[in-house]
Length: 67
View (cartoon, rainbow, N blue to C red):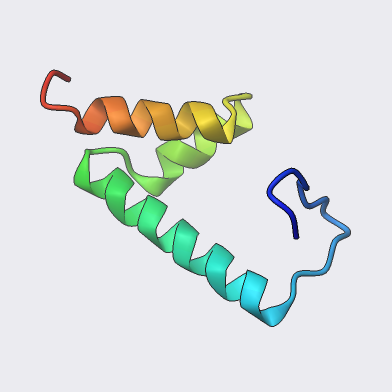
């Protein structure tokens, strides 16, 4: 899968892609917890329309010493 390709719900992931995806989600959840944002809040933010990029920026800001 190329970086420009966004998977749709009907796309099948290869076993390797599924492993990479699972590792990325695990790291995201762990980092979110570290900066005080539980998984449920991250899901709520995404459900409300926040982009994945926006979520990453939000978490980075929460983890910043200036936050």
